[in-house]
Image 1 (cartoon, rainbow, N blue to C red):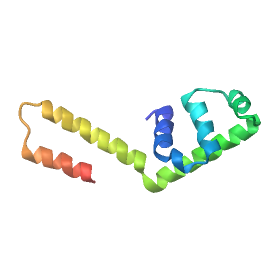
Image 2: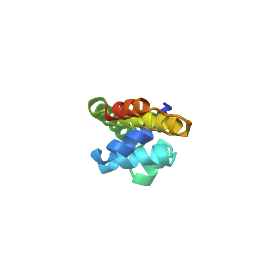
Image 3: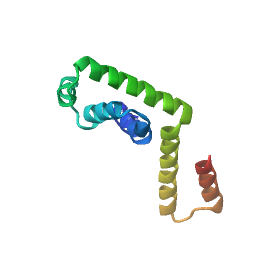
Image 4: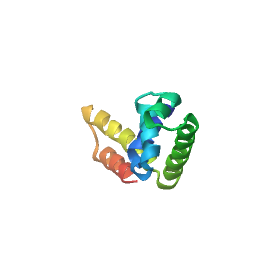
Length: 107
């Protein structure tokens, strides 16, 4: 998965667990595509403070994902749902195929 997409998913799932400053820095940098200098000016802090906030926030987000696996579970469900959609367009789908996909979705 592209790093930018992964970061967005991490923010979506775990953003509320960050401090307001960390979340704000991440959103401005990754979603609004602002540079560290622009963010520093916007927030009235140093560029180094923005850098430190971004680094710490990403460490926390990756740590949460390592422990909770919410993003990987989401990706797995999305993949299975796509397989279900594909299977449903087929003329014939067996009960066994449906049960297999459902079992995979349940984990």
